[in-house]
Image 1 (cartoon, helix red, strand yellow):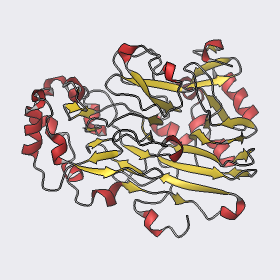
Image 2: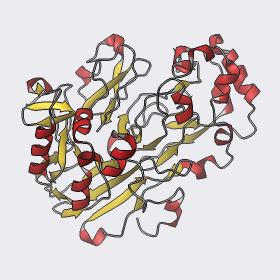
Image 3: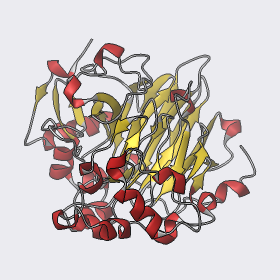
Image 4: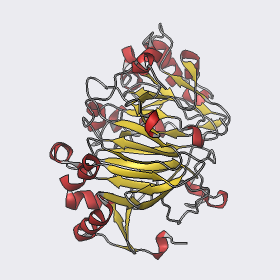
Length: 422
């Protein structure tokens, strides 16, 4: 079994290694699993990580409840390891971060438009997987995050059926506020922070989560993600503010509310309330504005595969990320073209991708390398990637997420209602 520990880590001059790997694979870079712990949450045990490795970072760091995909974004954890949150490329017997590869190869990997505008891969995706709900929280806007030298974070959710055989403790998500909620009510919740449960969920509405569906969540909108294992394409940032003081009997420290706000505002309750997008939070048509169901790209069922949009829509007029789910029937080979670079993970089945091994693992040890994750360059995506399902009985299913403004043909929110075929 090949492990991360058997690889030589390279920290500079990785361009020749990248070019060699791309030439051999038709534009693919193989990635190692990137595990991230959270000290304030309980792992949901559906990431396929071996149970003995759930606390591989140490009990004090918390359990591993996230796996990040094609990430060049550091995790904003206290006492984090130097490379926490950063995906590693595996090339032969060496490894180097995807961030370093992008820094040296730029547009060759992510495309000229994204490189010229952002100078980096500005998005990432993850699985987050918890036994219970996450505190009611928001992610700052671009303008708010800039006050503390960070970037804002819109995000999206898709609940892959393959990772949700059970719903765990609370498969419901509170989002926003009930229409008619006042800022004074929210301020009162902040005043009651140290009295126990500050009651902010009394002002909100919960939505039942359904595997195979998703949501698009703009910045500054409160949400308390429920206990389904979630695929989460998002902007490349880890900013947040937790507005709930107690979750399942566990304290949420005030520091997690204000960690990404200016220090002189940490006790300014009016400022903290005003961080919220008020119209967005009390939107009476919240579900219609944010709910997603898969939309097939085309009716290709007769060809033995279906590609579906699973994340789509715009935030304040911008397409910041999108995602697709490709299902290939047993024994079928198909070549799929895309407009831009993407990060890919295999969630079911066995096969190949441009002749490289592709499979969904049953169980993963903390340091183990897998064959379920790749990064595809823009040129590779546009030329077409060939997927072969080598199983005689099981579908091959992959999820792939894309960067900003590369899929102008993606649907708009609500498009699933017009879908005429499954």
